[in-house]
Length: 444
Image 1: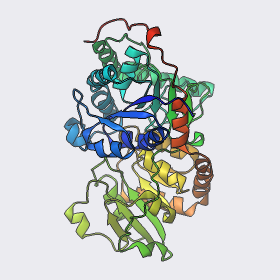
Image 2: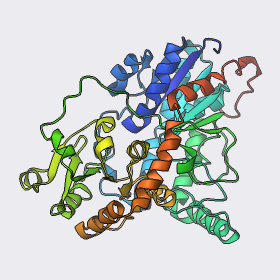
Image 3: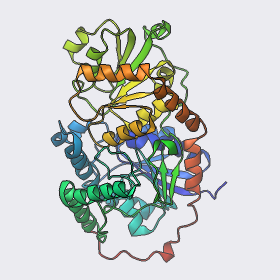
Image 4: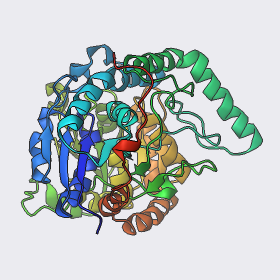
């Protein structure tokens, strides 16, 4: 057991960034550490439930509880690299200086031995650079650091370590730095200047902050691209956002139909996306006359009235059904590529059809394709015909389920939250305030 410590958690106020850290925080508080958690007001109760003390966002923009379109209206309708650029700059870069100010104020009044943050809470990264307090990243999605063996994020490409492949990767990196993501790279330099930190001069995604002491990636190694230059602080700890069994679950009225002999197709676009016309509606139409049971989960955004009134006979629609209850009965998941949902499916050996169009979801889809656990539909407009063909192929070809089953065995060998807590404890005692050299420049 490590020395009892004071831990400061900092997370972007969004479900996908908060939820993976919850079980880690629970382990840390149960092991006797004092944990304070800086995040949005919408997560105050969740923070309290794991035994941590909530620290509100005073200066920073607290967009917790809002949809992306509500919090950032200019992002509505964006896909591909445009969505990627807007997300990086508005959600993560522009909010970081005020997050840093809040965190430095907390550090002034609360002794901190280690900082734990999601891997895109750059305000925490800046606070670490100013103070020297060790930092552990908790990955909320795929591995985000650059590598000579992979193309940069945003392109949805698979890995390649061959000479031509590394040339491709380098050209895409240069194209991103100087063309497609030039403005994003420039904005990162500007944000660092605003916080009194020197320019790093690295590529996009690497020029916003220095690397952490630990990088805890919430999946298994076989679901991530191989890299000869993997950051040495990286640990694949297994899934972090898999819920514990609940005893209060009340199944919907149609639940017994899961056992009537039909194959089950789960269609979901997670809790953030709210454009049902892109994935949910085409999928419902695509599967309407197949001899399958179609379970549709709409997240926080119900179907429009016209669609709800004209549902086919084989469709069952719910806002939410716990994955750990539903996935043992599912034969294929159709998804927009949300990282936690994909990991939940694979942890239950469920193969996938992925239509990733925004944020890093095309890159999640590329890993699904590379691992052989499903079909990636790409960013093109989804038609019922494309979805129907893909679902039919996954149901008919046992290789997809066999590949997913192999990954499930690897998932079963991990206790992600416990291992993450143990690794974080390894940073305790490594911080010496007296040895911290001041950062050049002042905070603007």
